Image (cartoon, rainbow, N blue to C red; front, side):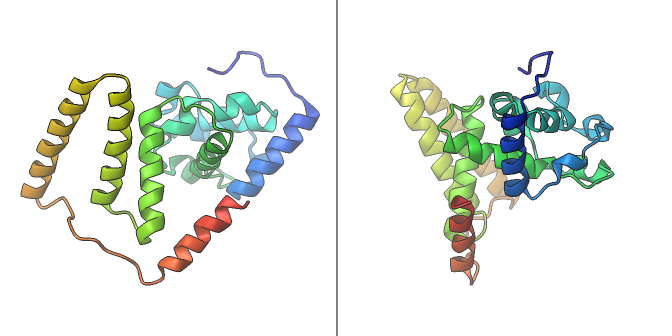
Length: 200
């Protein structure tokens, strides 16, 4: 969790601020801490870090605290923050950038399951050009099952499989589970965007 006293280091601040600004496309220096984003953030209370606080950590150059906090992984990208922000700063784009930076640094995510779901979502989207529930959930469930089996949690894996099967049946009955595989025509363009993002 973030420390109560924030320290400013010029070199670290300039480096981190420039990197996040460039990669997220957001003008973080336009934030004047009005806290309108904090008032509307649905996960701020749970994570202990609100969007304004996250931006302040970046501006002050606190890379470790900026990357390693629950808001980065629990942000639901509802864009309430950007809607309320008088300068149109979209924190969801900032948290997405910090997720990528965390992965690049091989940092252990604070919420591994969310990290695994994020990875599955990105893999499926890159492959098909759009999100496919069956493929993404297969990737996600496989990753989590392997991790839990390596820890000897066989019962947890079985319970998860039964729970997911019941959920799938319920969704199919209500026609809420899409079993088809839809691909966009220009998948190569989406894949090129992913490659470009990697090479930032």
